[in-house]
Length: 103
Image (cartoon, rainbow, N blue to C red; front, side, top):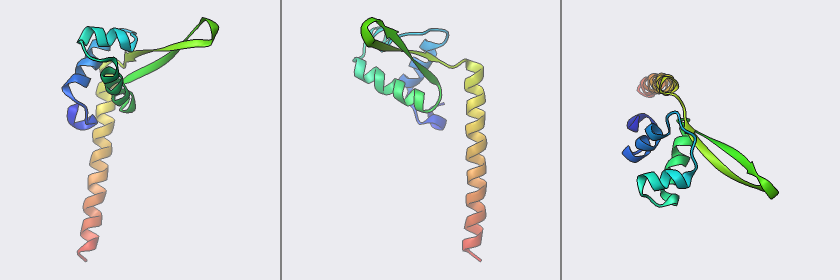
């Protein structure tokens, strides 16, 4: 996961912690004893690579907050496979283009 998604051990720990849970960033920060902004950076990376989903919750008087949950282990495995397939295709095309440069 680290290599494919370019994420840290800490990011992976947050992903695992969120399995089957829906939590706010401040509660995750409490669990990991990290600053909320550090957790939010990790969550942003995890969202960008598709491992975590963010949901907006509306509260009274127009306010809102976000909750986070990770995708299932099975969905993560499928996402990894798609990423590997894409990488393989990109490398195959790069090799073909490299061969053309030497002709």
